[in-house]
Image (tube, rainbow, N blue to C red; front, side):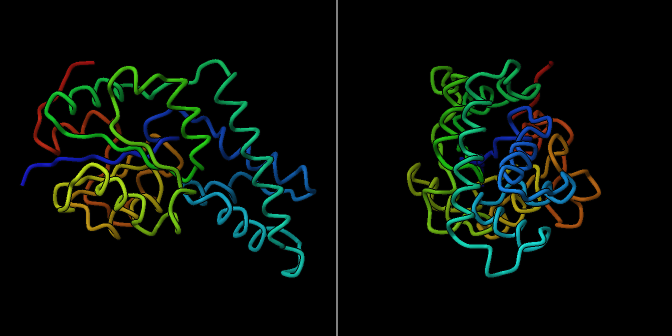
Length: 234
């Protein structure tokens, strides 16, 4: 059965991220006197951001459970969103990872649709897509943020929604691609035919292996061979 849809993550998978997301988390937390190391933040990349903040506060702060209120989480979240929007609107060097746009274009030529999903809220994801002009370039078919479904990753609701919008019924026609454990768990929960981990983001190959994706790749162009549409020269 041919592949009809590939769902890509954003930061670390299709868009260059030099720990920028984790550093924004760290900065937002610090504004509220919560000081957490990047090594404690990185494993939460890919999750819906309010969930990530709550789990980081619970596991890695000195706050009592009673102090981890929805108000505090929302304030940290709002600060994180502001920092990320400013970063993606104004920072130089916001770019797709090597080979990503060429790979997307090749997939589109073979009538394979491209969905983008993310642990970011839609407003951040939309800022990135506008900056990179992916709609104008004809590279993507649908974008969804984690705040547009009831539950973010690892629940499969974002993938399910993309399939619904793009009129794809069978998960055996779908591939999920991401750089974190929760991307892999999401793809498995959605019963995607292929669940591909990429080593261009937060997790190393050995860290990804623990979650048993169908494939692990070092360059996004390797997807073309996996789905059987050939390769291109960089």
